Length: 136
Image 1 (tube, rainbow, N blue to C red):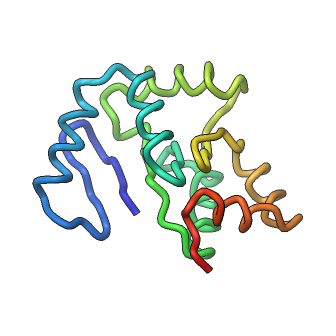
Image 2 (cartoon, rainbow, N blue to C red):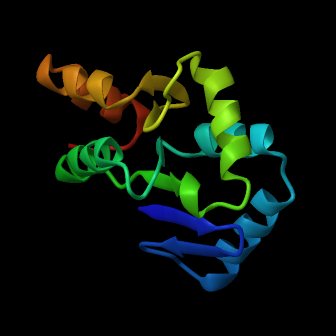
């Protein structure tokens, strides 16, 4: 899992080296919010745009963790440009409240309701496997 906490800090588990994390972060810092969202979504199997104090975001992250998925998580309330990123998510998602916003395999899946429904109907695990987030 990679958690992007602020524009100056990246926490990753596992991280091969601090240099690679900081170089990724430097690249993200130079991007505009739209480019940052697009880059994160296209370069990671699972991305969750979240708010650290949002119970629905916690449910979405815990579901993914329980399945053995290590999503890239961006906590928007801990980002300097969080409001701008949230605005971009509104454009990408076309919804009024896109938090949490879950992307799998570069595609917007939805929020926690869609994620839970996909899990219940059995379509989530195959989707995660196809995206390369699960290997079993």
